Length: 269
Image 1 (tube, rainbow, N blue to C red):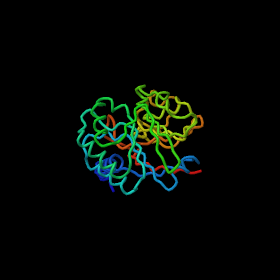
Image 2: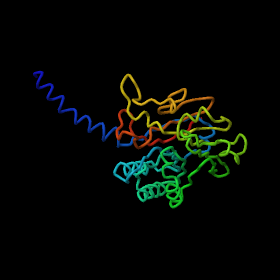
Image 3: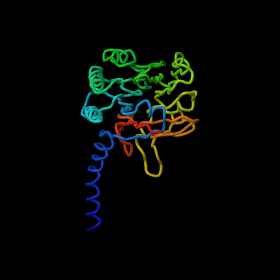
Image 4: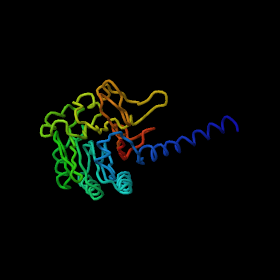
């Protein structure tokens, strides 16, 4: 093959590779199994499935969001936890309500806020109220399994400094087991570890665009604090943090090496 023919072939492959990167890396959610060591949560959720979703950035209820609903439905979870960034400023709230209704039809849902949500928080409050999904804003909810109970702590967005862990846990008994929902993963460096079995977060989109040998294209010290927490399971001060890659995109409508994530949480002793 001549150099000219090779160059033509390469140029022809570029749009194919970009299309694959878009349809696979950007809009096709990946179901991940995340094993988290916690005897307390293993006991509480024994035989039950928990799914964590975050960073939908939903504008319209398009086929990407419907794929997410379909994949979550196949998992048949017993509980869905969502940690913010549901919308953009131009979001269709009727579509958002429909998305939330379909999620709730799959399993009970509990939610907290992200930084993007403060553009339209009154409309968001109404959407969650209309669908009967609790939106925890610096407050706690209790979930039960037979005679056992566990607290879910929903913080307002910590990236914008609206979080108040003291207020959220005011009614939680000292030492009681809890799962904390904090949108930006750096919350792990801020809260009291007493009773915290797990922190769930998102915000960073797994880096959204990862460059080989470099890592995330965008790096923000406000997001990352002293560590990256880009995606996956981390340990800090005796606590376990799970940072979800999220489902949508921010700033650029594109992902690379950071697929949208539907996280199934499995708890082990």
